[in-house]
Length: 177
Image 1 (cartoon, rainbow, N blue to C red):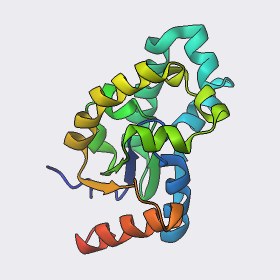
Image 2 (cartoon, rainbow, N blue to C red):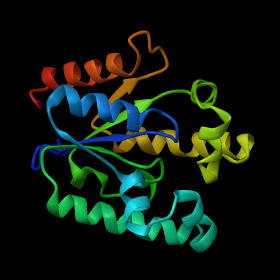
Image 3 (tube, rainbow, N blue to C red):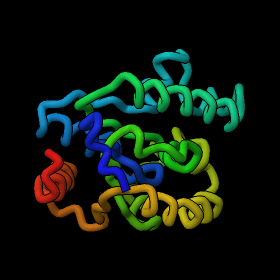
Image 4 (cartoon, helix red, strand yellow):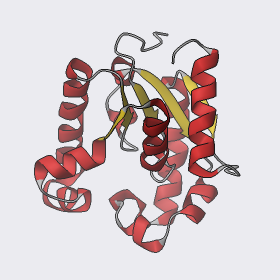
């Protein structure tokens, strides 16, 4: 498996609500890198919230935008922290072209407990908890298979910064950062 060292990006993957954006911000600060949050970039370029894109164009329309962004990032971005949407590594099989891929692994109940009602409402695929759990079960193995490294985020005694520190330690031990 390619280590993703060609572009020195660190790509965070995981299920919706696993902490990719918040951990990505802390990781970017720790490494003096820019954070590129895929969902935020899509919202900014489309001038619509993710839920609005899903309502207007369906999941297929959103995935098309997500794929185009991933391809652009792979061609143009270096030395960044990239926080993906939960579906990007599922629907964009070349996720490793973006950089070294780190899976933020948390079990479904942990993720559900962390998210407020408002946070769950922002995620169209989280509208029905039983469907979201089934989706989580489908995706967990794919995340693990596409990642270069996995960080367990169920126990977050150190909070977001503690997870970012664990990622840095993991990548330093491999000579990546």
